[in-house]
Image 1 (cartoon, helix red, strand yellow):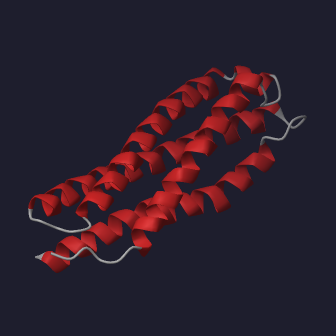
Image 2 (cartoon, helix red, strand yellow):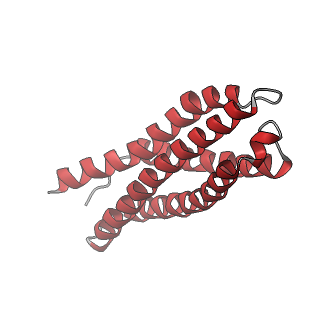
Length: 156
């Protein structure tokens, strides 16, 4: 049972770390190129909707993984695990950051549906601020997930 729990925890941390890395290094740059200022407003609007939709789906999956990690680490802590507190804190911090990212994603999705930003060429001070918030939240999530993947296996 412990091996199954450990495999599940590794999978949850891997979903957050690897998924975020793929989204940040592969998906985002492709969609940003389509949203450059001065481009076609229809293409910019479509790229923004695709980007927000993809990030929202990833963030939901990562939030579920972080919640599962926090739940399993809570059980491990109650069973007397030595490193469980560190893993639990990491899972809870990731959960909180991902919840905030989902709130910002909801705002970005509403803006993308309205199409107002696309009419301005896909830019805007408020839109840029929201994207910076998402970027600033993504970095600590990836760092925490990677650190938790590299830490030693929790022992009983």
